[in-house]
Amino acid sequence: MPATQPKAVGDYLRGLQQSIISAVEAADGGQAVRDAWQKEPGEPLQGSGLTCILEGGALFERAGVGFSQVRGAKLPPSATQNRPELSGAPFEAMGVSLVFHPRNPYVPIVHMNVRMLAAQPAGGGEPVCWFGGGMDLTPCYGFEDDAVHFHTVCRDALAPFGADKYPRFKTWCDEYFFLKHRNEQRGIGGIFFDDFAEGGIENGFALIRSVGDAFLQAYLPIVERRRGMPYGEREREFQLYRRGRYVEFNLVWDRGTHFGLQSGGRTESILLSMPPLASWAYRQQPEPGTPEAALYSDFIVRRDWV
Image 1 (cartoon, rainbow, N blue to C red):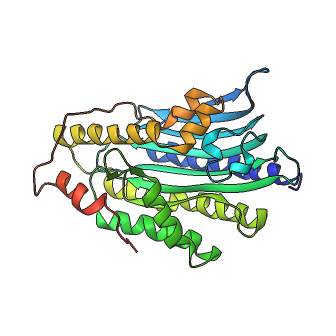
Image 2: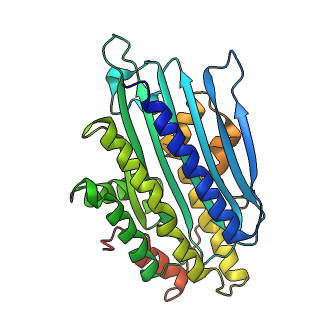
Image 3: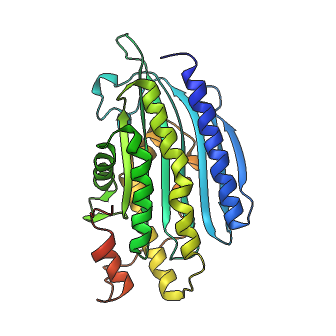
């Protein structure tokens, strides 16, 4: 792996984090906290990062954008599911990850992540480097034009890398963001990819740049369409109930959360994806013909949006 590559990737990711949190502050009108951190000597994971988080805003109840660059002696099991030959290998990982929980139930939750991981095979040989990431949308109330817009931007971001990438990564997203214990999709999907090394390091780096740079175009127009919609207690209660599903997925199934916790990462930053409030109810069933019922029947199902 070229010695200059980690620096180039890290420089891009830091700039991406700053551009996104600045856009969040401009849209919300609030000020994010910028919390720089450094792992202490002797901890299983070494490195540093910056967590930017806005809480209690007019638009976002919680919006977190985290950057981290860490090194460890052994890849955790969550990172070697598809690469068993790297089990126990020393590694370096860096990435930007974000989750936004809006205040208005009509504005959807959004997640985006772009990352690079490099490992040195335990038996020797050349370092192995791969990329991952994607973005996905989780509405509480579904709108066709929002879903079409989000998926169109995702498709266009992947178009320079081959016509196969959007359908492949869209399907991967649908399969990944699935609550197996509920037999339910988390949201309307988007794109997801992992262990991507096709075309070499430069191609993988270009891919995560294209995805990262497309995020604000994919999300902010939806925010502007929905942020002024009036809502009441019913919509708020349904929003909190649906946030419970988000918590379930992130803690039970998400590989990124598992990787961070298993490798000894910074817990406060790893769990920035958690909503400030969520609720659970026993066997809640929406009334037929309601917008809440339409979410289940028309939106959190696997569909071809574009």
